[in-house]
Image 1: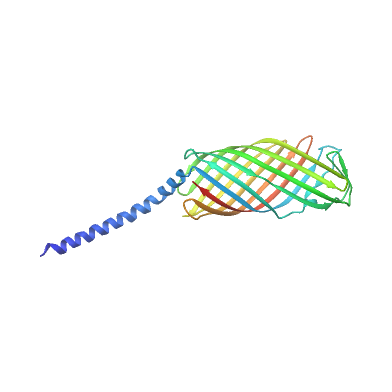
Image 2: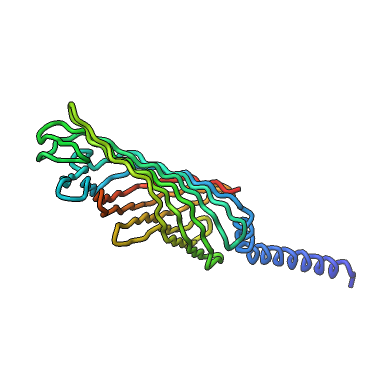
Length: 266
């Protein structure tokens, strides 16, 4: 028997074995490759935008008998109005992350007060067109520690330092008044992401805290789709609720967002 057929058979077996080994190594290495890409992305930038609505916006300035409770929702309307925010995150290591957030929020509308009101030392008549302006800009720095990191789940916990710049103003013909305040608020941060299939993930992110003087909660749930190693898009829902009950002001508001975002990693 010629040795050539045996050599050809051995060659075919060798090629087949090499191909199977290559396929197996690619399959086994896929999760590790995804984790390597994630760890190599030291910077993450996300631009989020979409329509927002409000279902509550109560204010009283000052927070005593000389101030009148006012429903700004009746003056500005429920929306929708545009809302945007920008995230920038730096990850110096696999477990640690620092995230900056700029989230401006403002709305304006004209309505009619159903009764005369005293706001911030000025008197406003009932039945007269009244323009209300509400601004609540939020700037945050968050440190996050990654508790869980694998091919299916990520879980983070952290602390957020929030600077909020708020302003409420009322204006009628011949009279106007503006209340503004800038303050610092510490918050807890929790985040979790689940990957049900390659290229898809569902992410929950929450900042929040509560005390006798007030509370603040910002919670989102998003569905992300990876377009490449660097680019992703998302759609989801966000709710923002909170306010203050202190001597000079009572204010509580509740906003709802339909969110769309673009993410770039590098």
